[in-house]
Length: 106
Image (cartoon, rainbow, N blue to C red; front, side, top):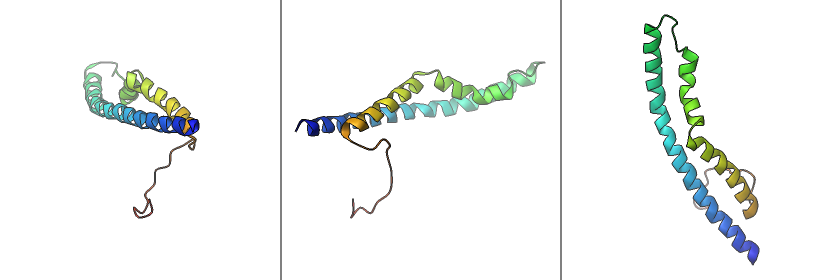
């Protein structure tokens, strides 16, 4: 039936979206390396400027703001909305549950 084909296509698209999300998550490793450098640079600048700038809170939030300004953040938001719609089309739950199970049970 047409609904089965549509649901199967939605599941295939969902698998693709999961892989895209994995690629976006892989890019987040870059921001971890960036944060440590930002903190070192911020500390060095505070040591030599009379105003002790940049302020520590700004240095701590630097990577988060860099991530939100990048394409990965926008892609993640788009994937979240896309996955929600795909779950509706496939007839799935509005959330994904990940749990361990006995391999004999499935």
